[in-house]
Image (tube, rainbow, N blue to C red):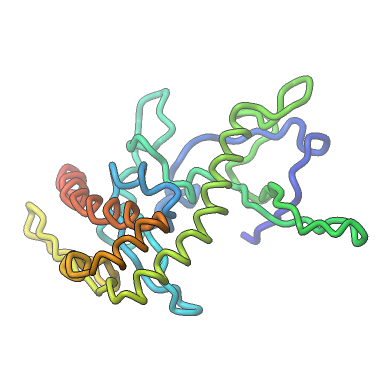
Amino acid sequence: MQNNYVLLNNVEHADLKVLEHYSPDSGDGAAAVITFPTEFENIQREYPILLRKTPDDGDYQAVAILGLQKGENLFLGGTAAESNGWTGHYVPAMIARGPFIIGFQEAAEDSGEPPQPMIYVDLSSNKLSRSEGTPLFLEFGGNSPYLEYISGVLRTIHQGGGVGRTMFSALDELGLIEPVSINIDLKNGDKHQLSGYYTVSEERLNALDGEALHALNQAGYLRGVFLMLSSLGNIEKLVALKNARL
């Protein structure tokens, strides 16, 4: 289905609601989702963080690993009545944003102001409803708590995109990024491999001189590196989730 993004407003969309449920049918079934340094603190508690190259320009981007094979999200499947379908505590921003994105609206020509970030909504999304779900706007005007939450999610994405590009470029310049391939053996004998990904070399990181480490720390990147490395322990969690479904 083709996307139909329009500028969100409280007149035309006063009664618009969002169905807060995650499922493969809603497009949430990817095994990996783009993530950003601005959410690494939350991501690293539950999901492995790896890097991959973008197909268009070959730049590095971070991804949270959600499954061991294509089209498999091991964090879907909450069945309780109050469940939103997501079994993890933190929903990655690119999934949590649902049918919303940040777009830029041009300011008046004579104002001299730069384009302003605004929230756009995909009216073709099956996560929207006029009759049921969580409202975007309060009955007598103003944003609902849910829309305020979405605004925060979109800020995480918007700000994180720029931070990620400069951070991974800096790591690459220092020769810290290396390819990684992770072999996984399941209890039923099946074997899987996470390939085509990259990570930060601990050996090369430990070999950096004080000046380089200080520069990474001053830029705020060193903490992100440590969060990425600590997140790799969550691969065992993915294996346990997968084994529990066999």
